[in-house]
Image 1 (cartoon, rainbow, N blue to C red):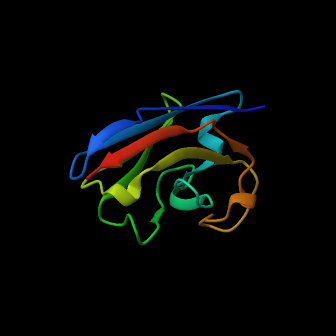
Image 2: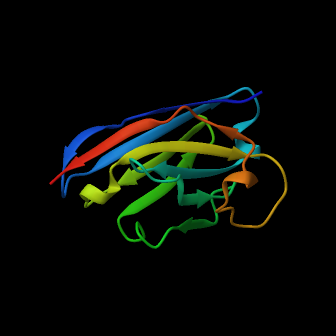
Length: 126
């Protein structure tokens, strides 16, 4: 089993920055491709960003490209999401997810992931 624990969420103003963290335990973190998803209030969960297990490939949803940066530290077993120029529409519960199975190079679909964190709330006020 894998445990994923997100942190770093909070209430910020539009234009601010925030860094989310996701600490993994239970299986070797370096063997997992990782993703960030978010669920805005009243909406379905949506893809945000992806990084391969080695960190050599990254991908972003169009809505966050250029503002968000996904990264990882395989020594600290931690995934990060650096968010800048935040907008009210970025308000959501943010989830990290781990994929240990072999799949497409970039995983943007929820069903492609094996484990999920409990989420952390990000609220951006205008």
